Length: 343
Image 1 (cartoon, rainbow, N blue to C red):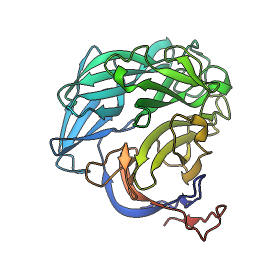
Image 2 (image 1 turned 180 degrees about the vertical axis):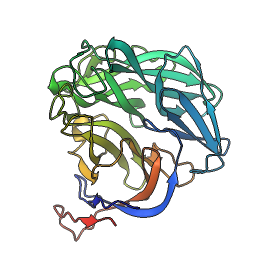
Image 3 (image 1 turned 45 degrees about the vertical axis):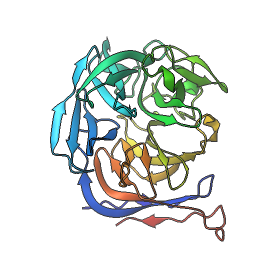
Image 4 (image 1 turned 90 degrees about the horizontal axis):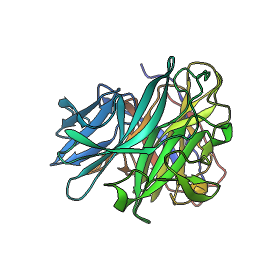
């Protein structure tokens, strides 16, 4: 049964509109506990799904995955969740993963973000070290139910305009002013040696080290992640939209009761990744529901990182909606917002 949800075609800062339309339900993968990065190789569609141990799923085309195998890890810590990938022209695959340190605080973990490389299409991965880590000590009194701090739940997107990889990640500790969704970046030519090459954005500058530095969030938390009533965006998924000619970010939001409840899926837009302040306040796309929203492009060669006007919306690996983007109508006031009810 399709749940009634609030769909909001809305005008964002550049005037584009968006709406959800129902489509035939599909499931991307059977095991989804994070962002699910995908890529094409040898004419086949590949998707990583993770729940502490990553799987590589493949099939003849998008959404028809008939093969699944565990990824062979070489030097990478466990548990880990592969959340973003990038394929070079020569087929070398770069992967970034969320790892959770356990055993520090009873019942709570501390995430950090690492990098790896694969020379066999993702069947195995060789670790390249950690690239993003909090500089704050874990807080074992945190009451969110999952994390005592750390950086994790992220996406990585390449920006050809300045040849950098941008990391949009969730930060769960320190002063509440440093919690929320933050951003860091790395020159693309450091992808083989990324440890120490990632720099966080703080106070208008890209000058804080990825390992231990401070952040100024793109979307700050409204209530402390350490409380039982945290209120914050988290788990960003970013793609380049070829129809809009800008970047699109989907986000989870947790608010405002114990247990990390999902308060909905939100969306924001930016033309320039080098200017974190260019992202406007997110608009709601879906109320409540599951975690881990992201798009999957349906055109030739499209992925979770590149999509067109009508990508599939996936939430925790399941899709029964597409997002339809539209360019601004010159006759429509920029402040106009309409709402419809899904059925």
